[in-house]
Image 1 (cartoon, one colour):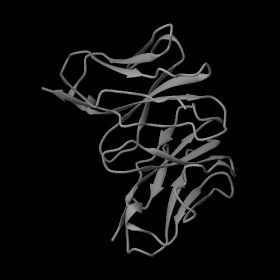
Image 2 (tube, each protein chain N blue to C red; image 1 turned 180 degrees about the horizontal axis):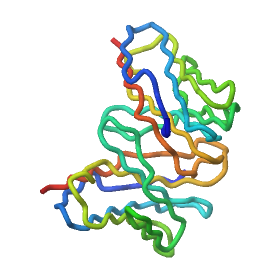
Image 3 (tube, chains in turn orange, green; image 1 turned 90 degrees about the vertical axis):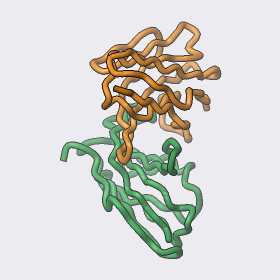
Image 4 (cartoon, one colour; image 1 turned 180 degrees about the vertical axis):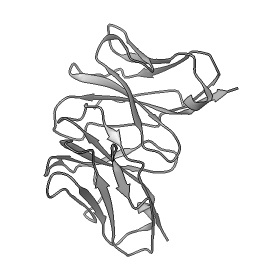
Length: 112
Length: 115
């Protein structure tokens, strides 16, 4: 089970780009990297998922270097509403075993 | 509705009572997950269903916790003889396909308080 390490918290300002790096040194060959966002009193919300290189969608980009031992979630031009906790998950495909660990997440505070 | 629905939203029980928490997943979603989230912590996996089959219950903390999904849609998490350490938010998630890495759609949880 790949363990992840993220910064506990980050502060930013409206309009800036926020980059959150997650370390996963013992990632396995069949592991994917998934990021979720969680607001207070709500369930987590899927943001983006990737295996290697770069993935981009309408809300974020995910950068994964060739060795896959880390990944960076990039949130462009954040607004106050992006204040939330962001979780990095690493886990395999398949249906066997307890493979999902959210960890403590990164608390992002966007200031005006 | 379009999303995962959980009920009740809040539940207060006395220590020793049994509680039942309900999850209505997105229609047609094969996979269903239950998580426990303590205050200030990330969600912790409890159990996983593929349709009606409970394929993984390795995260259930004790035999007081029981989950079922008898018809492959609605699921119930039951906690017997509740204890104060059971106080947490219980989250349900569903995904369209099988496996742990499919994007999961979460409900807003049931906040359980044991007095």
